[in-house]
Length: 201
Image 1 (cartoon, one colour):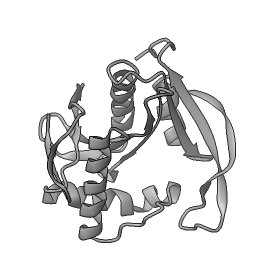
Image 2 (cartoon, rainbow, N blue to C red):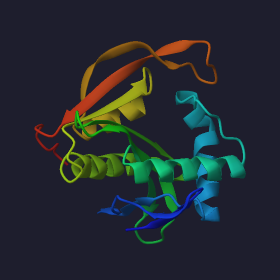
Image 3 (cartoon, rainbow, N blue to C red):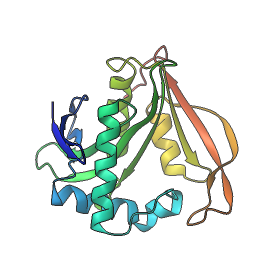
């Protein structure tokens, strides 16, 4: 278990670290200057903003720290888990993967991820998603894990398919256009069930 510091004091993280080939998934630490800086860089980077429009934009280190504190509280409450995808040897942050909107009654959640520019092209997202999905659909006890990405985001689509997330359809106007909250764009919905076969590596 990992201790986290939030506005209510130090609490125990209920989610374990996950280990896979070349990567380690661990909770983001809002007390770590390196984690806060990596989080800010990831969610303000141009390619991330091309495909995502945060509801609460983060523009500075204090905002990034508060964002990580909020995620730590959500983990304690059991409604989401936010993992830093780190290099297994160096511990360097490579990206992020989160299991969000966890519904323990329906055994359903949504997964999202991003990778820092210097880590792209190394199948970091694929490794992180495969590892996270395996854990979420077994140890976490979920039955269905959903993944949505903006239509046209072909790299994210390939990651989903490699990890056994079947394409289920197009959701019309299901997310904001890049950098806007007054216009919408379509989303491709993928999902994987606990009863689906493990994808071939």
